Length: 239
Image 1: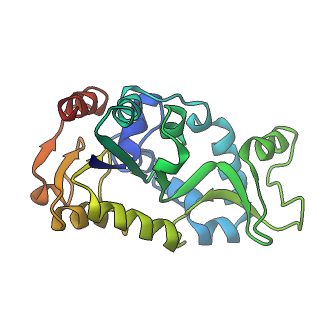
Image 2: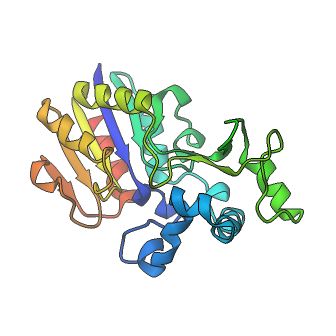
C-alpha cells in the first residue's frame, strides 16, 4: 500500500470559481485590505469588519462551489487498489469531501467555512443558519446561546492551528511515500513546512503550482501547468 499525501492550497479550487489569495489575480493582490476580514484581531475589534466579512461569506462563491477535476482525481485515486490517500488541506471550502473523499481522510488544517463557532461559549452551528440570519437583516449575528461574537470555524490569521490536527498532519507527512503540494504558495507556516518534512523523511516531493514556492528546490518534480489538467495526469501515472 502506497501512502500518498496531498497538501492542497487555494490554487486547487480556482477552477471551482474560488479565487486564490496571493496569485497575480488573487483576492489579496486585488484588495490588500480584504486580509483584515480573516484576521482575528481586526475581526474581533471592529464591528464594521465583521459586517463586511458576513457579506463576503453570503455573497462569495465558496459555499456554492462544486468540486473540479483535481478534486475528483484525488477521490478516484483513493478508490484505486494499492493506494492510501490522505489530504492535508489549507482550504476551508469542503470540496475534497464533496468530491467523495471520506471525512476521515481529510485533515482541514485551517478549519471549515461550512460551520460557525462562537468565540464565547464555543458552540458550533451550520454556516447556512448564520447566513439565513444575515439575509433576514442581522448584519453581525451574535451567538444565540450566549450573545458573543460568531466567527467561521476557520483558523484566522492570528490564531493557532489545532495542535492535534497539526500533529496528525506531521505524522502523515513523515510516513508518506509520495507527497504532492498542490496549489499552495507554501508560504503560510506551519502548514508549508509539511512539504519539507516529507522530503526529509524520504518522500518523493512534487510541487504543482503556477508560481515559484520556497520548497521548489527540495522537490523531485515541479509542475507549472494548470492544476485541473496536471493533477489528474500526475495521479494517473501513479495508478
